[in-house]
Image (tube, rainbow, N blue to C red; front, top):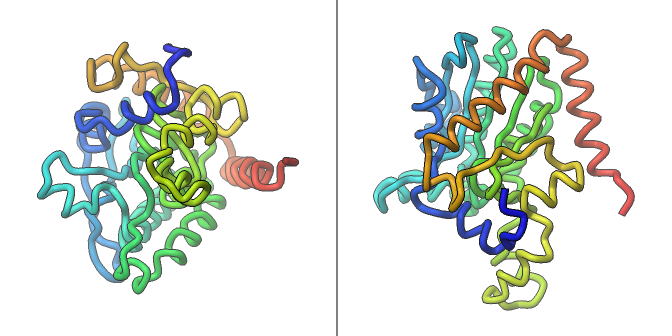
Length: 268
């Protein structure tokens, strides 16, 4: 692990266009993946990929935010920024997983929820708030992995988990550094300075107790050796599932809710 890499350098790696995303991770680690689409309310949001799969022979529900590899895909997926339909789809799959006793694994790589007018008209704020509320009460194990960017409530809406992990060069923050700099200094060009202030890197967040573990990446980032990065992710998920599966559902839900309430009300 490169402890000397700056926050801005980690952000650049987190945003690398060839970094393994949800589609690649699911294809490599979750055989027999069966995608489930639609929110049963308004429509389908391709920014969130979700369904049922096997993980080392165990049925799980896996949900991930995804960006496209081409301009056409990026436009179709809102550059990885989910709409309310996506969050409602994700929550539908989580409730289904709870019904059938399947652990839930979420893979998060998003600049934030889609901020367009259509998203607001369709209830973006309510969809995110509902996801936060319902995830805190799920009676099955939930593991969240920040694989790239994890910004704003758009990321947190899939990260109310019993265990939160980050890839070594991922970032997790209340908003993008560009947005932070625009608000604080009215100058988005100071985003590298913002990176250093935001405490957004995996080592910083592990020290603060916001996350539970760091998944190492190959030298140069996950895109340099995707196979090695995915093997490390696989091992981390196996370890966390072994610790969580079999615990009483009420205990899992209580622990999860208490964890996030403690962060909210921690002394400043």
